[in-house]
Amino acid sequence: MTIFVTGGAGFIGANFIFHWLAAHPGDRVVCIDKLTYAGNLSTLSSVLKNPRFHFVKADICDRDTLDRLFAGECPDAVVNFAAESHVDRSIEDPEVFLRTNVMGTAALLDACRKYETPRFHQVSTDEVYGDLPLDRPELRFTETTNLHASSPYSASKASADLLTLSYCRTFGLPATVSRCSNNYGPWQFPEKLIPLMIANALQDKPLPVYGTGKNIRDWLYVEDHCRAIDVILQKGRPGEVYNIGGNHEMENIAIVKRICRELGKPESLITYVSDRKGHDLRYAIDSGKLQRELDWMPETNFEEGIRRTIRWYLDNRPWWEEIVSGEYQGYYEKMYGNR
Ligand code: NAD
Ligand code: TYD
Image 1 (tube, rainbow, N blue to C red):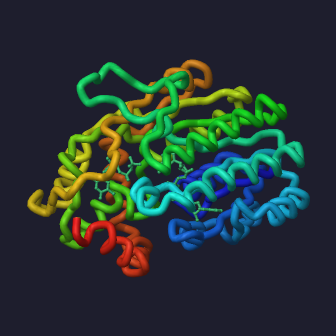
Image 2: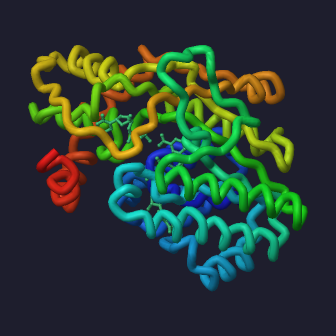
């Protein structure tokens, strides 16, 4: 079968492509990616020459190109990872989030409809549910929790989820949606918490913790997320939403201290900076449905996952050093310079 993976030059999409090519030796993967600041062709260098892999530089909002690609390839499935994915950037400039995350998803849905693609999968986030209070540890998001997005990023992802489910109901498009908690692992762009702290610590730079550092996220190793999407594509029911979580909640400050400890760096590098606007307090996912119905469980515990991740950033310095020495510097100065 041929599978279209959009956003495959980014963090999770690239890990998914590696997973799919290894786990499905008879399948072809076509990656469609615009190569925004977050997309990196060098991430895919190990598969670029694989005859079962094809890379297309294209914008998911470009309906003419999508038409050509769908007509030529007739994909058996489309997995949509392509997105603007960073909350802080959505607070600075929401418009591109609406364009890619909403209009881009709509363009893909229309192409799937026109070419009768047997499966569309929308990769979404637990952030569409909003946040939970810090003093109610028993509360967790289920698939029936109301959508209550806080940031322009999560609002755009919630819109894309609703559109996807509407195409399923109205047009009978066989679509599924997954909502995952925070991912970490190899190839993550160093604007996100874990790789930013690893890269800064390795350069002996301050480690900027927002607000009190007591905000909580539920962390999932990226390979477990890829396996979950695989199982949903194979066995998930169209029209359904599946939560994916790591069952591993941690305060941000504990993560940063952990990274310092692993790297042998002093905690004095930690610098508390002003809080993110509208900062979600806690995310916690109940992924019982996925476990019960599709027999999926996270396999990598945090201890092992964070060690592997830190090892990867130590072993792949040229990959992230090239990023942080480029236009990222302007971004960093703007976001953290006067914070
Ligand atoms: P990322 O920012 O690392 O990668 C996004 C990729 O999409 C990049 O390669 C970029 O070039 C591409 N892209 C952006 N706009 C595009 C467009 N208009 N057309 C084609 N390609 C475009 O993101 P990520 O962390 O890998 O996240 C992937 C998906 O998973 C996103 O949809 C995100 O909302 C979702 N998600 C992420 C997390 C997380 O912790 N990172 C958690 C849950 C869900
Ligand atoms: P992030 O990786 O941006 O993911 P998200 O906001 O989508 O959960 O941030 C994770 C948490 O870490 C979030 O509570 C914000 C916090 N954070 C910092 O304290 N400092 C930073 O420099 C960054 C990037 C994030």
